[in-house]
Length: 132
Image (tube, rainbow, N blue to C red; front, side):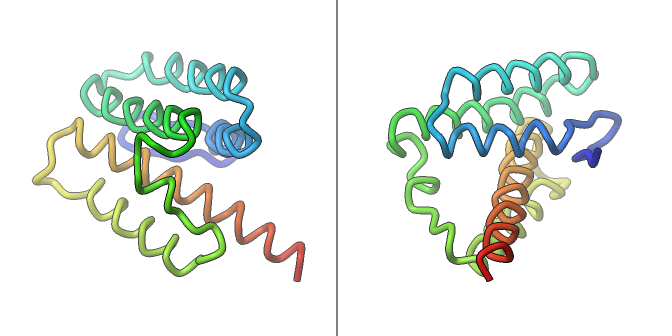
């Protein structure tokens, strides 16, 4: 199983992939259970502010899907067919997550967005390969 790793903490990629799938299928109760698993796993690390930012971003993504895209305009305008734009978003979030000038909370927040975009990209690429 591949993990998304930062510092001394990791979240299995399978959890984020499942979260994306459930949100795409509008299965919010199940998605929130996955988010709770991620939260429980993160409680075991000592990265409080980083974790808080990470979990806020994931909670925001869940809320956005639940509310039909009204919370984060970014996700409501996300074109899953534009892999180049998805890559640019991923790289932008990744760069911000690694910026030492950002606080731990901000790095956690951007890390979650980068991780999520990585899962979206991987899912879209796999889907496109299956169709092609």
